[in-house]
Amino acid sequence: MSRTTILGSGIAGISAGYHLEKSGESVIIYEKDDDWGGLCGNFTIDGFRFDKFVHFTFTDDEYIRGIFDKSSPLHSHPSVASNYYHGHWLKHPAQNNLAPLPTEERVKIINDFVNRKQKDVKDIQDYEDWLRVQYGNYFAENFPMKYTKKYWGLEAKDLETKWVGQRMYSPELTQVLKGAFETQDETFYYTKYMRYPKKGGFRSILDSCRKGLDIRFNKEVVRIDTKDKTLYFNDGTSTVYGRLISSLPLPEIVDMIEGCPDKIKTAGHSLHNTCGYMVSFGFKRSDVAKHLWFYIYDEDILTSRVYSPNLKSPDNVPKGCSSLQAEVFFDCRAQIPTAQEILQNTIEKLIGMGLFSEDEIVVKDIRFEKYANVTFDKDIYKNRQRVLDYLTEVGIESIGRFGKWDYLWTHQAFKSGMEIAESKINTEGVLV
Image 1 (cartoon, rainbow, N blue to C red):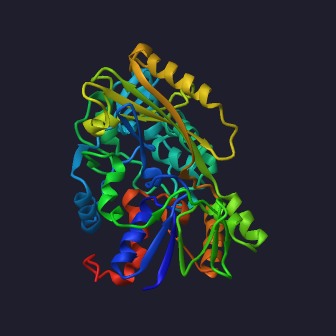
Image 2 (image 1 turned 90 degrees about the horizontal axis):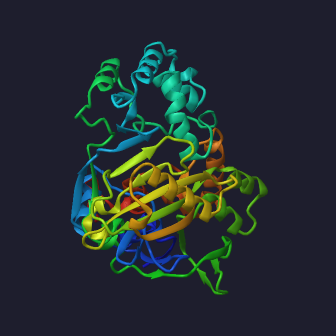
């Protein structure tokens, strides 16, 4: 059997390893950390389990869903999210659930929505332009444009629009009007249900794929010689590879490759992403969490999104307890506040929102991740393609969110690993 090396044991790396071994290849996975899962991993503090950022699965792909179900029984949650805006709680999406807002503000939003400029798709220049065309100026400026700065770390005018797809709901006037006068029962999210493992945290959806894989931990690659097909690790060791598959972030792998041209390094370094803090809380009360997840638009609150691990699954907390995890994102080139400043702001603001009192906190933790999301700035496509073309040229196959440098949901990242072995998969999704 041929020898295949995979860099990274996140969801794409695990999927690639599993499917390649099913197709007859011998696989070794090298992981820089001391555990597997990547951004799908988790950590536990005093019986409270927290994922690395929020994760659900909602795939309709029968093959992928079957693998996830085989790994772990899943809870199925209705996709009911909320929004916090200047002391008001609105059902998500906010644009057609305006009823909790003051009358004057609802009138401004509806008036601008009715009188918004109309443009052909080809004439829309950037994400800000797209938002104004979709929702009108007032809503665009006070909701998604504020949230864009918090979540993506850039202004809406600095982003392009191809990534949006079905992620942003565009309501009709009748839906906006109805939602301005009453709470709507209908769910307008892009999926009706979000699924989450009953036990083991989110990464347990990969348990059946992870089983039996040869993963070598604490093996961080620092140099790649593509001519001699040799990997060099930070512990001073090296290994020869036959086939090389990487889920490593593109801005980093260009610095590892011996002889990588300056123009390719420049393209890789020009790619934008968000980094982020996870601020995690455990409580000695069972009823702190009221929302599965919610978004925050207020600019003075650094947190952009909060979700509840215990509502995702009671297995994530000790009996009689509850938990919250806040996410705070920044552009990778931004001047970032200290962890202590972020922790203090998060605690003070969430208390101010009435979510809990400080004496109820029994666990508090803050952790940083260098790579959270790929940012779709206006130069992403040309820079990404230059790097990917070069990697193909030197015999490196890229997978995963940061290896493909794309906005991939869980099942899409899993599929990117699966497609590495697609020649051995028939049209029914069954390995042969």
